[in-house]
Image (cartoon, rainbow, N blue to C red; front, top):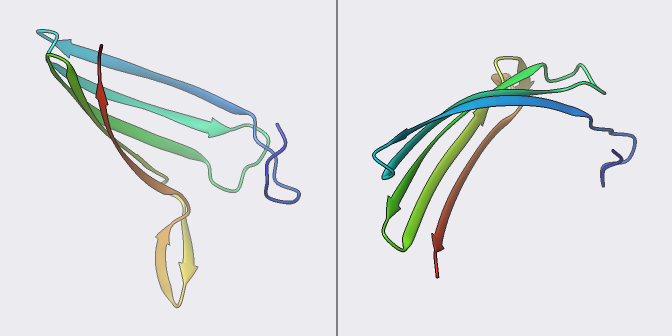
Length: 89
């Protein structure tokens, strides 16, 4: 895949598991790797979902153990978080 970043390509291989507890709570874990680039390595993912009748709340995060240096501080090369609120009708 080409991306909006000049010269950066992506070809992700991903997998994960979800544990659904009483159709109310979903616990998720997984990971992905960009097979087209080796700069980030494996990125671990996790999340929680809450099903409240017609409203769903989902929280997810991703973290790369590989580090980069910014202003003399080591930080993860990739870190993401997402929050979603949705209604079913």
